[in-house]
Structures are given as structure tokens and as C-alpha cells.
Amino acid sequence: MIVLGFESSCDETAAAVVEDGRIVRSNVIATSVAEQALYGGVVPEIASRRHAESISMVADKALADAGMTMQDIDAVAVTFAPGLIGAVLVGVNFAKGLAYSAGKPLVPVHHLRGHIAANYLTHPDLEPPFLCLVASGGHSHIVEVQDWCRYRVLGRTVDDAAGEAFDKVARTLGLPYPGGPSVSQAARDGDPHAYKLPVPHVEGKYNVSFSGLKTAVINEVHNAEQRGEAVSVADMAASFQERIAQILAKKLLSAAADTGAKTVCLAGGVAANGRLRQLVNDGAQKLGAKVLLPALKYCGDNAAMIAAQGYFEYRDGNLADLSLNGLPTLPIDYR
Image 1 (cartoon, rainbow, N blue to C red):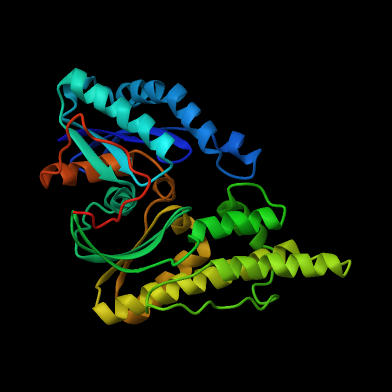
Image 2 (image 1 turned 30 degrees about the vertical axis):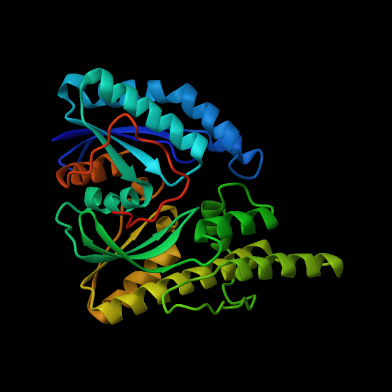
């Protein structure tokens, strides 16, 4: 089965063709990240405008790269939630029009389900059940993937997402957007034990909190400036990365131990962080669990992951009609 997928929930306009939820035939991304970097983060209005300008082009290129036309496509999948609502609506409305005009089924895909499905593209033998940490700019969830379209959330952030904390800390340290890659790069030359950053305590065994950690970095920088001093950007980046990676890995591995999970996965943009990958891999080995990590090219937002999950949603009977609307928020276990 051939699925054409679309992703436009943030600042990437993407289209991809995926076969049977596993084989990527094409994967095209147009990003406005360089323009967004001028403002230190995503400006929703700019993102929406760039989506509207690019989506037809990426659709055409995805089909051309796959050597296909709409006649070869069996279904159209699209991210419909959660995300920046103006951005989401561009993708939803384009996909609805395309599916209607071509006479193809329309499949709504939850963005976080798509991130999890990125692992199916990298590991063709992966099947539920497994445990997955989904960490990105807008979300931080520990999810028990019970079946292809059945999920149980074990833990989540109670305030800021991990990726959001990376972005805010990067901005505080004068590092470019997006924060994840720039903090990781700066951390390579730093001492991860130079600054004693706090470990937030939250209710819920597997829940996480990053607001206080972000504030601790801001306060360290501000207090140093008041003393006429400067923090070491490399040391602070390394200390922050170490703390946030330890928090995420500890919560995920604790959930894995308690549930007896045999397979542990990462997903989302923060899953590209090398230190997090190392901590999860080392800890899972001690538990006797298998660790499967998505290819770096599928960690960030892309349409291949949406097309992949679209295949499984289609099999599960999750189809939409032309009344489909975009949503800014929606639980991953909504159905």
C-alpha cells in the first residue's frame, strides 16, 4: 500500500511517499528554520505563510522523487493535531483537497504517533508492544505503545517540553536557534559537572519538569552578569545537556524496569541528542532491554513518519471525510 503523507505542524513543510508503513520512496522537506532563527524561535504567522507557499511544491517533488503520480497513491495521510493551528490547517486543507480531487481515502495522523512511527522506518522488524520516549520542542511523553494505534501515556512534562527548554537555554547563552543542535555542539568542549543544576521534583513517578531547570540556567547567567562575570558557555551547555539527558533517561528506564519492557525506543527531535542516546542505551543494556533508535534524519519533523503511521491508521479504520479540522492540542491516546 502506497501512502502520500503531509506534515506542517510547525516550521517544516514536508511530503513523503511510503510503502507499507516501512519503505520510504521519497521524503521532501522545505524548512523556514533559517528565517525563524532571525527571531530566536518559531513565529507562527511566518510558518503558516511559508507552508502555504511551499506545500504544492513539496507534494509535486515527493511524487516525482518516488517516480509516481496520484494514480499510484492508495491513501493521503496528514498531520491534523497537535501543532501551531495556522500551520496545521495549511497541511490539512491541502491534503483534503488533494484526496478529494484524486478520489483517495484521507487519513488523519496524530503528530506524536508519527514521531513514534519513525522507528518503523529505521527498524523494519519493530512491532508493538514497546516503550517510547517522545521528546520534542512541544512535547515530552513516555508512552507504552500497546499496538499500532493504541497507546498508554505513563509520564509527561508538567510544564515545558525538553526541546523548548533547549531552545530557551540556547537563547540565554547566545547560541543560535534551534537550540538542541547548538547546545549539543557547544557542550562538546564543556565540563558537564561545572555547574550544579537542580533536579526538579514532580508528582507522578514518570512525569518530568523542565521549567525550573531552564530558570536555574537563566539565573546563573543573570547573577554572573551582575557580578561583572561571564559564565562559560561550553560548561553551561554541557551541564544543562547532562542534567536534562539524565532526567529523561532515568524516567524512561524506570518505566521500562517497572513495566518489564523488552524494547525501548526514542522519538522526536530531542531523540537526536547524542548524550541522551548514550544514557538510554547504557541503562537499557543493564535491564536486558533492546534499544532501538530512529535514524537522525527521521528525528525531526518529516512527512515519512506521517505516511508510515498513516498506513497503520488506515488499517485500523481511522479515516476522515472533508469535515476534518486541525487541532492545536490532542492527547496521543485520543482513540
